[in-house]
Length: 326
Image 1: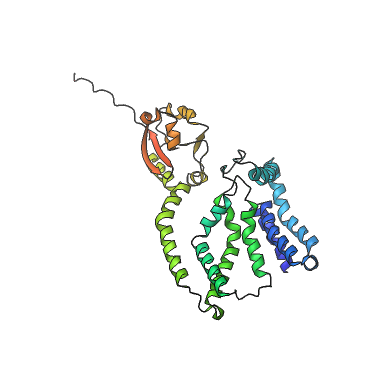
Image 2: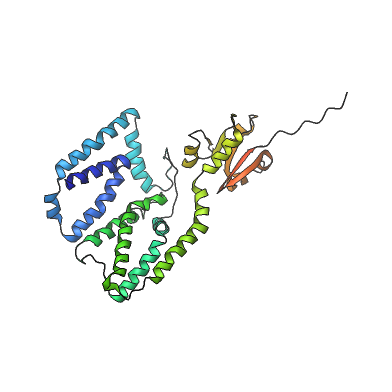
């Protein structure tokens, strides 16, 4: 039963995220099997042939249906999203997201940031256990912790050489990280770990969480969500026909909260189409985009700042001079 559930899980991964879900599953499983010398056992106990047939039966029909409804889907999704996204930094073929040009290896700082404050606490506990000779409760040779390490590291190692990544690419390894932290925490409190102080760990957690809530969250959230910007635009627009315009590409968050009703232009120079049509539209621009054109300061009125973006509106037309009486 568990063997077939494994292949059902592969099908869910194919439907939810595509082939990368299968890759990130087989990397830790395959390496663990080779490491622990269990190839023969795994070959005998897992229903490979019928399992892959089950996976194909669950996932392939959807892929074929998607290709029939939207021709070119398979080339875009398999070659583009799963090869060019990985190998081409700033890949421009993304139809639904944003190309993210990142330095190679940026996945590791992302992994550290995503596990704060627990990664600091965990390292502290591991250091204390090493000094005291304390081991987690699980037997040292049962392979469980080895698998957790491989699971945790599979995603950051796989994306180390990718130049087009997102912060969320570290998520597949977080459950394994959480289990490793829990084992270390348990070992610190075990009878065998008496004398290993948890005071520092207990104090570090609330302090780091408070620092994160005070300094990190207020800065990060507006950078990645356009909810407040879109709400401000909708409130000022009222029931009018004023449009919301972005340069180059609208963030997915803006697309979502505006229900897809945003407009994008290729460059700041292309804004003239909307600046000159006599309608008081709204524009979401970064400071750098504004600085590309000196005339925008006179032609647009700032409404508010939302992270990196500033919401602006066409300046009202100059008032006509008053007509003399009589």
